[in-house]
Length: 326
Image (cartoon, rainbow, N blue to C red; front, side, top):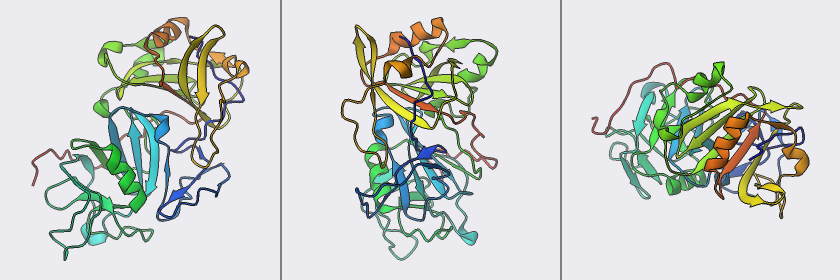
């Protein structure tokens, strides 16, 4: 495989990247938002981004930032959505920590607060904290739950399962790549900092593969079934612009075929594949190139972004909350 990046690659992503579209509970498909940096910060209450095609399969996790009032959904370690939220108000502050979804219900009413409706409820604690659809006034206003826009709550509910990891943090920043089972473990990328690349496929022998390239870090990260299995340096001949996403179609006599993926607010690209010029923009170490080629299958996704992969961690006031807590 000749995995390359180029000056013309533009993936409009769904995290702190350049996001070209906004979806709301009252979506207007004809509306288009011009891609600009800071689009996530500019989301208004009730708005969200959703791009599940960036990682069609794999484990799902959610990170909620109480500081920015945003929830970030990841699948296979790759961001596929971000939404505005409303967390607990001053006298009912939402607890920070690492939670798992204990219970799910499409139609649920609060046992504590006058049978208040909690559509698409995903319970985080047995004493009343949950993700669910609700009113979003633009500031913390709940009794401790994390309210989501109705449409986003339904979408997230549809791809999640009991046991899903949910991280609630006070940090404003979140990681671009978030391997679900190893959130608190040392990253393979850290091991690769002093070397050209690291390759440890045994960490996750099977599952869907996603690849993320950072122009700012000049690094590539490979995830399989939500676990980081490889990382290395990327050499490019020009700075990466915004962001672009591709899905691997297979091999051909001319080389690898990557289909450009439509992103929020963009029209579908009819047979728009990565061009030879784009593939010739840079490369990865030969050993890592061959290793990645060995795990490529149709449907593997590739994200290229100018943003940094560096994580700010998962919060400062962490309390691990396990299944069966009060």
